[in-house]
Length: 45
Image (cartoon, rainbow, N blue to C red):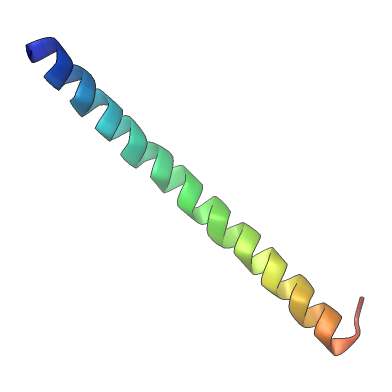
């Protein structure tokens, strides 16, 4: 039981740190997509 609890805690901590890296990347990608859509809408592309 202790081993599985330790493994779970490790994977949870891992997931949280992954999310901190993934979140800004996702918002960056979303910003690029929104920028392209706006530029396309305004006829810049």
